[in-house]
Length: 185
Image 1 (cartoon, rainbow, N blue to C red):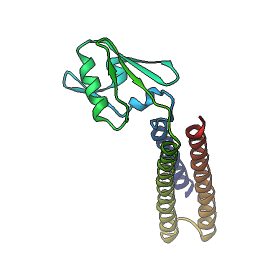
Image 2: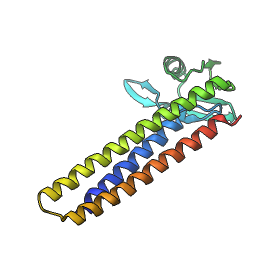
Image 3: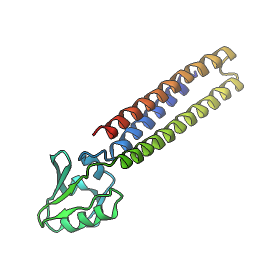
Image 4: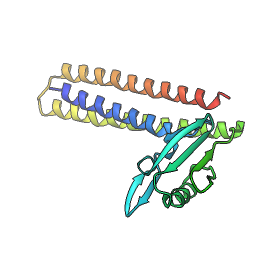
């Protein structure tokens, strides 16, 4: 009976961790990564579209992205969106392609990025604990409605705590990995 509650909580925790990884992948760590453009949407004839739907994005060098729009008139639209975004890189437009050159990160910028990572990881941990709390409330309700025994309630809470601990451990692992990537020169 309580296994459904735990399975639901486990799924929600997995989704939280997947979202964390997706958000952290958009942080630039001194290397050119096309995922930094994932948050951008380009107005393509009235339809908001991702950059990779209106242009070819390539990484010719470790610290450079080249965006080649399929239609020349999209060049200025893409450039304007990049300038408006929080990427922090000024695009260079040569009339055919847009180049984004990622500067070498300073020690101070690396530390700021690590703080951002820790903040996002902490937010994910809070979300995971909130999922645990909701699941615990559901388990207590099952006990109150006499659908499970007190022993079942204890077993469910123990199992739920193990699932939560594993999810938090995974969030810490993701944090450590991203910090290592940011701090490596």
